Image 1: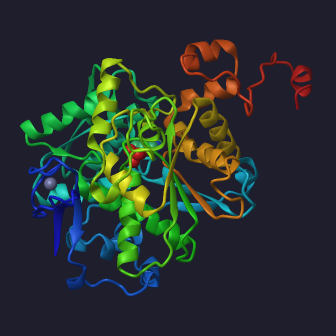
Image 2: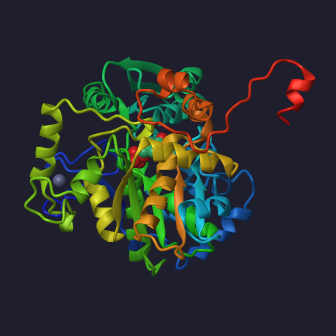
Image 3: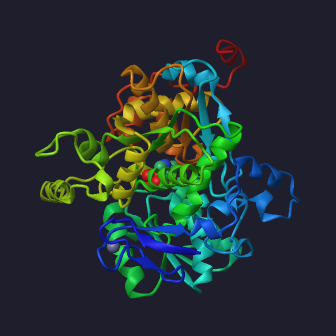
Amino acid sequence: MAYQICINPDCSHQYEIGQVLHSCPVCGELLDVDYEWDSLPVPDSLCHFDRYRSESVNSVRRSSGVWRFHELLPFLPLERSVSIGEGRTILQDARYIASFVGVDAGRLFLQYEGLNPSGSFKDNGMSAALTHGAFVGAKKAACASTGNTSASLAIYAATTRLIEAVVFVGSGKIAYGKLSQALDYGAKTIQIQGDFDDALIRVRQIAKDHNIYLVNSVNPFRLEGQKTIMFRVIEELDWNVPDWIVVPGGNLGNAASFGKAFIELHKLNLIKKIPRIAIINASGSNTLHQLYNKNNDNKNERGLRWNGGHYDKDLIKNFYDKMTSESRKAHTIASAIEINRPANLSKALRTLEFCNGVVSEVTDQEIMDAKARVGACGFGCEPASAASVAGTKKLVEEGVINKEELVVCILTGHQLKDPNATVAYHGNDQNQFNNTLGKFNITSAKFANKPISVPNDPDEIAKFL
Ligand SMILES: *Cc1c(COP(=O)(O)O)cnc(C)c1O
Ligand SMILES: [Zn+2]
């Protein structure tokens, strides 16, 4: 009833659910999990899912915002679901920052995925990946990570004891909040020389050679779990589809799974309208933006497109070869999206086609200013997440997003993940910048809430109150 299938329309090879694959063995393209929907109990309306919110607390339907939607990711029976209470996140009406991005009050919503058990959206995918991993009897699981995937794998390994976690991180490329989680939860943590792109290539090879279960977003089961972020967004909007979903783009797993979610909901006749998607790169790691929006040496004037699955692979290869020959490395303060070779590029192109999407880029300065506005709204997020808010602002200014449209920005990770970046921004002094942020191009901190130094004297203190 469920199977894996190559997304290359000229290949379309199918594989069983029990196989552990990260790409199609025949042609090398990415795989989807797919379903024979006709033989499955698909609800005829999304309202069907309302009932599960009132189920008993012990029910995984109630306690997990992923497995509540089991009918829409039914690759294994519900009883097999691995869960630690992921996906209990909220959609917040962010009227205090609607004016900052330039949309009407009440039209901007923030989906706070930082409220997951490990503090990022990655838990949505990890619960699904480890459900599959446990099913195939994996004993060890590994990932390459800019930090949050490793924190997520580590917390699942520590709480469920189903699997031993091995995480690979690039040297000096990980925010302290995230590294501290992997260490504290007891994951074997391997820091390799190089960045995320290097680590991912290495861990794919090691996982294969040593029969270790890989939980990066090339794992198609992981992306099934991430579809539920979109289900929860529309659930909170009383099953209405917003005009725009805006998401930061790193390895493009979210972009891939959000598109798949809408393709399936539409095919199953559960939604009529398809939202537009905006994928936001950091300008220091903007491969998708470059390929999608620029012509380069491109014969295809529009830039790279999915084109029904016949996308221009030479264009990508030339772009990557050029990066290699120039030794160009990703570089942004938004470390979670500091990725130059996004593994889910082809699936993201598919999403962009189906959702009539756009791609944009924002600078580190724009990211940190937007992050400060989000923080001042009372929830906060890490730098990468704020790319969605900064990107929305830019797209409104450019007239791509209309101020009356309903926009949902995905806040991918919690504010406490990267305290160094936050404190340096608010400190806004040149020493701090040089020490912590100097190597990033952040020259002003418009929204800094600078700590005030005063002598320990009541009269002096009173002057500042
Ligand atoms: C992993 C991560 C991203 C990037 O998501 P992709 O699905 O890889 O594009 C963005 N923000 C945060 C906080 C992350 O942890
Ligand atoms: Zn194939």
